[in-house]
Image 1 (cartoon, rainbow, N blue to C red):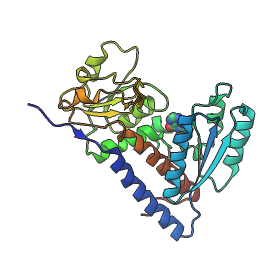
Image 2 (cartoon, rainbow, N blue to C red):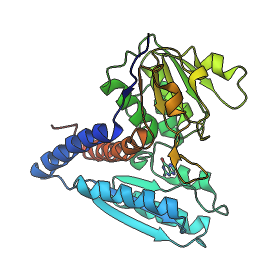
Image 3 (cartoon, rainbow, N blue to C red):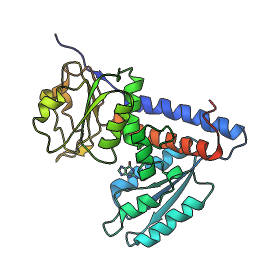
Image 4 (cartoon, rainbow, N blue to C red):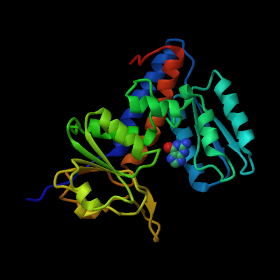
Length: 292
Ligand code: GUN
C-alpha cells in the first residue's frame, strides 16, 4: 500500500503564530503596557547571519515589538561585547536579548551567553534556562528551533505520549533541547549522533524522527518507518546552490505519513518562536500572563 506523505506547512503555521502574537501585543498595549522590546546583537559581517538578523528584526516589527539592533565590528573584544550585554540587561525597555551566533573566533562565546540575563534569554541558551527545561519547570525560555518543531508536531495533532522519538543530532541549540521537550511530552526519546551504530535501524524505530545533523540529505528511505512523522531541521546548500534538508525529501515520499519540507518547514517557525519567547519574557517581567 502506498501512502501520500502530508506536507507540514511551516510557513502557514508560523503565520498563524505571528497573527496570535500580534493580537496579544495589541491587547497588552491597549491595557497600557509598554510594547515588548527585542534587542539583536550582530558582531561582524557574516552575510548569512546578517540575513537571519534582518528577518528577526522584520518579524519583530511586524508583530508590534520594539526592535533595537546593535551591529558591532568584527574587531569587538569579549569585554566590549560583555559591556553591551550588561547594558541591555539593565535596560528596562528590553525584554529579549539575542546575540547572533556564530561569534568571531576570538570572542569567548560561553562567557557572552552566560552574561545574558536569564529572564531576557530569548534563545534559551543560559544554563538557568537549560536546567529549567530539563527539570520541566514551566518558567524556562526554550531554544526557538526545537520549540518550533514541537509546535508543528502539536499543531499537526501528532500523538507524542508513549511514542518513540529519535532525535538525530546532539547540539545544545537543537538536539538536546528537542529531546528534553519530547520527553516532557512523555515520548520515549533516543538521541542519535555521528557515532551511533546502525543509525538507520535506530531511526526506523521512530514514530517521530527529528533530523538535526547539518548534513545534506543524510537520512533517506532506510531511516524512516512506514507512517513516521519526519521533522527536518537541516538547512544545507548543495554544490549547485540548492537548499536541502538533512532528509532526502524524494526518498521518503510514500513512507513518512507527514514531513516538513526545506525550505518552508521548520525555518519559518524559528523566528515565530523567538517572537513568542520575547512576549513570554515581557509578560513575566511585567507580571502578566497571555491576555488573548
Ligand atoms: N545562529 C544560528 N541559529 C541561531 C539561534 O537560534 N540563535 C542565535 N542567537 N544564533 C543562531
